[in-house]
Length: 198
Image (cartoon, rainbow, N blue to C red; front, side, top):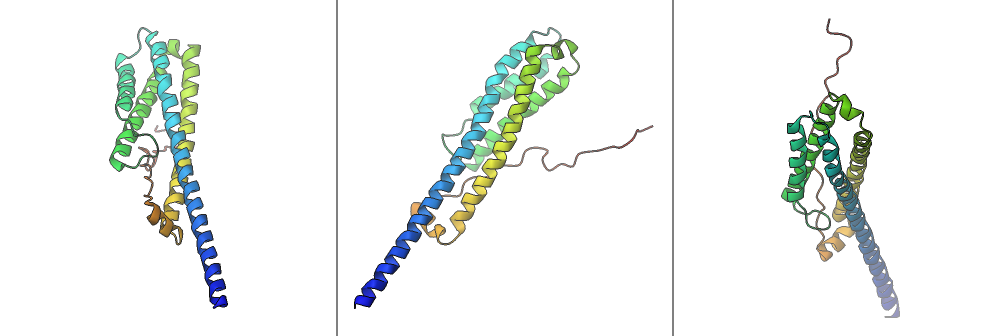
């Protein structure tokens, strides 16, 4: 009888230890996903906050293409209309709408900077060049944050399916985290031409 109680106690200690380890592992991975998402959202907000100053700078150039500037303002407004709830996004449709609005803003900014090449007065403006550098730096930070989020989600979602953490995840009611859709153009092969056409 004593041996049975000792074996039972050892078994309970092992199961308790596995349960605590699985729980702590899932909590840490879930928090990593939340932190990675917060960084993406933070960088998108940083970019959005720079737009009014950029628009003001560009408006100072009298002959600048108004339609390009309006596209940036409209894209920024669409980002403001599509907000996700606080925390990690868990609705695929809302996440896609949010990311589509962000892609629209990124595309509008890209067109603005491309058209700016035709305006030497604007290109010579120190504040425009500074804002362009800051926005390009933010785009790089967004790309890094997206990669970090995708890796965090992959690790978390894998843990939800592995034994024994899948038992704890089911007990806690944890759901898979949403992955990010690919950026527009991310799967396109660039058209590269070598030499001259003549």
